[in-house]
Length: 295
Image 1: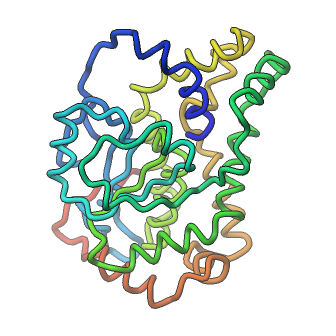
Image 2: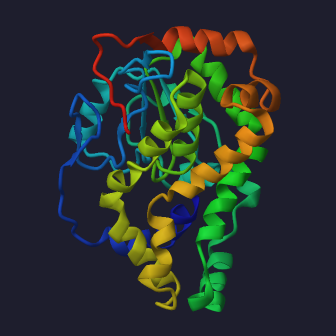
């Protein structure tokens, strides 16, 4: 998440000296792939659509950033055969936390938030100090989703262009925590493929389990940066996802355009033939195929 990347940069040198206990994070996908330091990793596929199709598994993955991978994680990552890595972070985030992978030539930068809109570390520090106990993070998070829906249409078009070409698969989406920018785009892909909204929302909420390895560190950073003026309870909206973050913008999208497909066609100028190509690549009849229906 954008907010945390700056907080992380501010305190990373101090915390790099700490010895952290390594633990295994079991990825949330049917293959039970394991990473020690890659949070919120799972499939975007494996979900059934309303017309008895299913998004193929092993085609699109999602995760938090790739900056903390161990040597074993790097080897495991390489076995996935990923051909395209969509890094949704800002340029400054990428610079401060570069990916620890061998496949650097496969990275495509699709920033879902412009660098120009990012406050400096000192601006955030002053905000946390000045507003302290009165600060509410829920409106901040909702603004992030609004910005993605209305202001990142070219970036969304760029992603769906990649998704229309079979040579780009398997593909991975990631941001910092893999829950907001990655969650929003994963939802758009699933909806465009025909997955029902209630299933998409349930799948989105799985990030609360996926980010658990990050939560304590992030909470510590925010509280330290605020000189402990911000409480643990205030920070909770930043640490995970809330259903209304995504649901609110999807409702706006549906009210205006009627469907995710119409939004992509009319607002993001994604050509219809590209959407058809994406569906042909991703979808297969569901009969006899195990699905991760997240209802």
